[in-house]
Image (cartoon, one colour):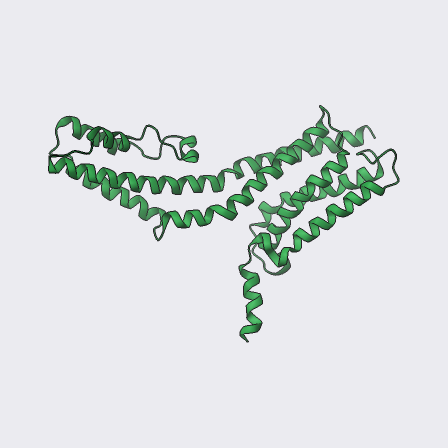
Length: 281
């Protein structure tokens, strides 16, 4: 019994890139090989291009693939199993999307210019490149997210920072006005509100927590000041973890803000490309 279940369980835990022993990688590779052989042996002189029967064939295949690949966003809303599970569809999306680099280039016959046809090709390449970034992100960042937050949820990390803030507020009461002002500035700041670039880069050069630590220094004869300094260091550590968490989440999601708009732009350019081709046919 256990011998029968092991292969199935292994398949269920394979990622979408390895789905069904790289089934869609093999199929996409075969499609590229057939397209390349056809390009080399097609009876079209001096060579196939977008205006030959072989060029139209590759163009039709590429168009159908692009439209089908764009349907992944709709497909995500339907949960099914088997050969057309979401994992299988995503695997096909990745490898057939990569095959478009070969099909699209052969369709254009390496002929490019300042026109809507080349615009469609460039947008296709940009969509594929942004998709590659998405694959890399989903393959590497979830593990980094889990390692960074350890056993804590995002809510628990936020609550730990708020708890430190309450302790800082109490500890700062006996301090001289200048030092108490540093703590008030720390508590008044939104530690995550430094803009999109700060979140993506993980750099916060105007962090008031770090500024307060620097201003207070390391040598504290006053036990109250020493307690505040220790709390600030703990807050800095907690902030660093939370900021890493938000950065990894942003890197995991930001590619979609490029990939999806570029996909719509590609569909619009393809529509113009097809209409212009048939208009001048």
